[in-house]
Length: 262
Figure (cartoon, rainbow, N blue to C red):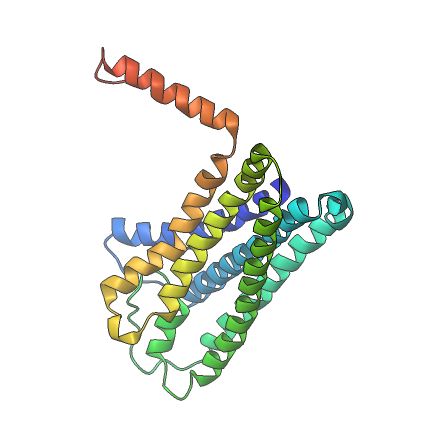
């Protein structure tokens, strides 16, 4: 799990560094431009890291399934070589997915200006600027990718059904609590990532607006990667004890002094 958490942290860091620095630069320097090649590179990197994150979350779900439902076979099914192969497959699949979408999207002619209603280069915003008949092939590629991602989502749901069935059969309450505690952080991350992404891309056009699109894009592109380290850190007992001591010390000192340096 820690090996996969390292890969997940790299994908989170990459996705945030792809969009946030450029948005901050434009805000600080009061500009709103990005070069054509820069836009293509930003879209490729964002799709690469976001796709890798979803594939890694799927693999981590399988890791939880094996550890709880087949604990005696964990060393055989998820050895170091198997984990490395799955991680390489996730990054390679993400690279191929990002390359196909970026190359296909930027091969379309832009017939409706060059102003994006977004703080980064995203596929739906580029498609709105292209000719209607030209982006049908990109929509076909999106449908194919959606079916592939839907398969991963079904696998996650099926795995958690099996996990919960196995956990409920554990006789001791302490054992059930320990099993649930290993799954809840991953389930929270998956729920946040999938729910914001699905609502952002599949919302009805009737409720679409520039402000809503901007808010949803922040929710699925910035919030999940930023919260993932916090969600998984809450499982670390030493970190929780340190935070509790820091909060308790600052609160007690705050009764005497207006500031506290922890």
